[in-house]
Amino acid sequence: MIEAISYKTDPFEQRYIDLRKTEGRIYNDAEVLQLPSISKDHPHYTEWRVRKESAARLKKYFEKRLSLPKILDVGCGNGWFSHHLAYIPGCDVTGIDVNFTELQQASRVFSHIPNLRFEYGSIDAGVVSTNEFDFIVFASCIQYFPSLSRIIEQAKQKLKPAGEIHILDSPFYKASEISVAKKRTAEYYKKIGFPEMTQHYFHHSLDELMFYHYRIMYSPSWVNRYFLNNKNPFCWIIIRK
Image 1 (cartoon, rainbow, N blue to C red):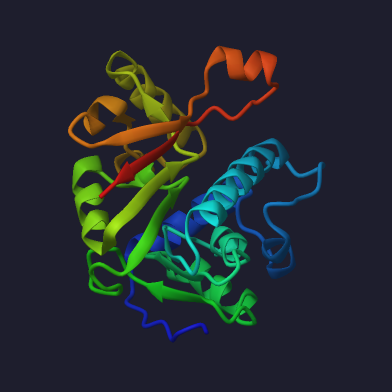
Image 2 (cartoon, one colour):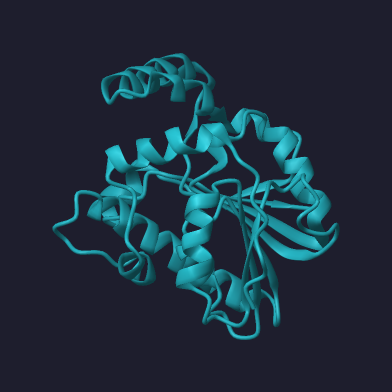
């Protein structure tokens, strides 16, 4: 059941939506319903192929771990990933986001899915309960949180005692690489006409996770890319409560 979404005006959001339009990342309802499958002619086809593989890998992992799991998809956007997870037998999926425009689309497109709901807000704003979820997923969004340790601590509060946080489809850098990565990001946003967006994109290192009991389930090593023909450039990380 999709629950009602309360909206508070965010002056930043329109600029963000304009950015996504410029990047070709705003999809119509019919396209969202089919994601992560998309036409080979689409300019982001390669990116979606990667996301399709990682989503399938995570779904398979969840299916083997628990019956009737409760899953929180943080930064769910248009809801395609939440929808993908909602096909796990017996599960209950909640997607949350501070992007009201895309969240409205998610609520509209996936209103027919009984075990899927969407909530407007952030993980620390009281829209979800403490000790509620078996799994919390950050898919392609951890780079939008300024403090990695803070968001992990907030997520841990929402997990059941044996719960897990999963981070995937987001870049992590060596400490020595961050300065160059920041410069590259600034140049990219300046080039496409959104220089102010640089302050909303953050570059995290695995060193920031040193105090957590984390496990890397997939690492984008040269061996994996060359011998297994796996072109996913992102780690899949699990942090247990």
